[in-house]
Image (cartoon, rainbow, N blue to C red; front, side, top):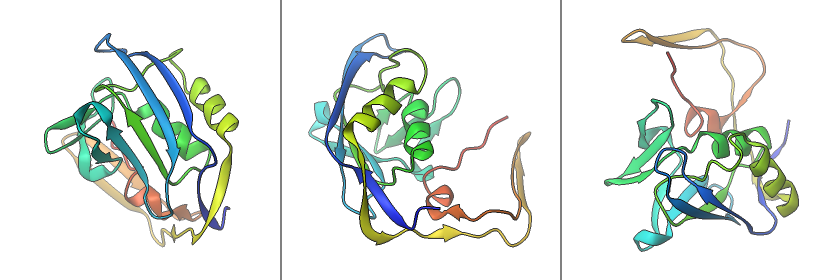
Length: 165
């Protein structure tokens, strides 16, 4: 387990088209301070911030969309999954349209971007959530369960939780 929060070392850029919108989009991933989390920054909308938090999940049908005050970021799931898998806690994602580019349809191009940018630790200790007893939540035919086992980074409880059918 990593003891400290992380961010990327250098900026990384990619561009392509949105899978659902078909529009050209460019992203730039930048280092962020400890405790920032993953924050999408809509550069086409006066640098409006949309944090990647369960509080801002708008839709999860065919794509995970985030929305804050009517500002949408769509198809975030591949990029967010890669951040999680690679242990990146904090990053700014500048984006100039409403949808993350699909690239080749997998997370691999994002993995390569982050590997090229490098990952560095911050001085902030990572917090973990320990599940002491099984917890299940059900609603409208959907269910999510946590069981005791390995500690989860506390970011699981805030920005990485999704409920699926």
